[in-house]
Amino acid sequence: MVMSLYTEQPGNAGGAAWDELRMMPSPPGTSLGQMDAMSLFSEVVSALGLRPVGIVTPWATRISDMEWDNIPRPDTNVMLWELSDGAVNAATEVTFGSPLPFVAIVTRSPMTTEATRQMWQGTAYSPYETQAVYRQDDAKAVPTILFVHWGERIDISNLPKDVLALEPRAKAVGGSLAFAAQIPVEGSTSRQAPAMPFSQALNLQMAASAPPAPPAPGPEPIPLRPAAEAESLHLGVPIAVGLGAAALGFMLWKRKR
Image (cartoon, rainbow, N blue to C red; front, side, top):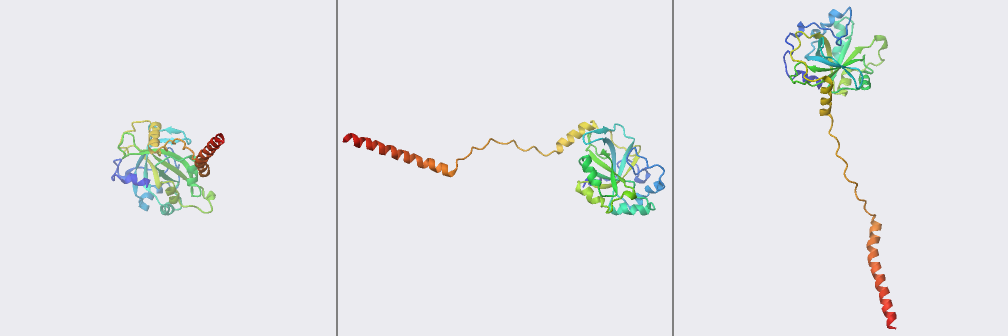
C-alpha cells in the first residue's frame, strides 16, 4: 500500500503536534471561502479518529499528460490521514450534513488525464488536480516522488444514480485513499528542498521503474526441408547410381558383340 510508506518512520516529521497546525482540507492554492462548515472540518480528524500518515510537500502540478508546472517555493505543505468510505460517509454527521469538499488518492506512479478521470468516474467526486509531492520524512537528497490526485465533491444534483465506493477505485490503481489538508510550511518542514529539478528527478524515477527491455531478436532460423522432399533426395542418390551402372554395363555388353 502506498500509505504505508508514510508510517515507516513513526513520529512527527514536522516538529509540531498534529492538532496544533492550522489546516484547510483543500488543495494548495484553493480556498473554501466562508463555508458554514469550515470550522467543523478541523474536527473531522479527531471526531473520526483518522490516523495521520505523514506530511508531504508539493513539488509540481500537472498541466497535461506530458507537462508539469514546477513549484520551486511552495507556500504550504499537505498533511495526509488514512481515509475509508465509512469515514467519508460519517463526516457528514460531524459537519451536520456537509460532505468532505475534497479527498485524495495517493499513487506511486503518475497517471494520464484519462486514467485519472476513469478512476473518479461513478464516485461522489470528480478529478480536480494532480500534484507531484515528496515526503518530509524522506531524507534522500532527491526524494521519491509520489502523486496526490485531488477529487472534488460533486454537487448533489449531479451525483450518479449509483454512487461507487472510493477505496476499491484507489486500490485498482495501486493507490490509497486519504483525507488531505493544507498546513503552514512553518512548523511542518524538517528537510531541505530537493537537490534536483523536478523534471530531471521524474525522468530518473520513471527510468528506474521501467521494465527491462526485451532481448534483441536472434538470427532467423534456417528453414528445414519438408520430410517428403528430404526423403526424395536421399532416394535419388542410389537410383541415379543404379541407372549409371546399368548404362555402363549395357555399353560394355554392346562392344563385346
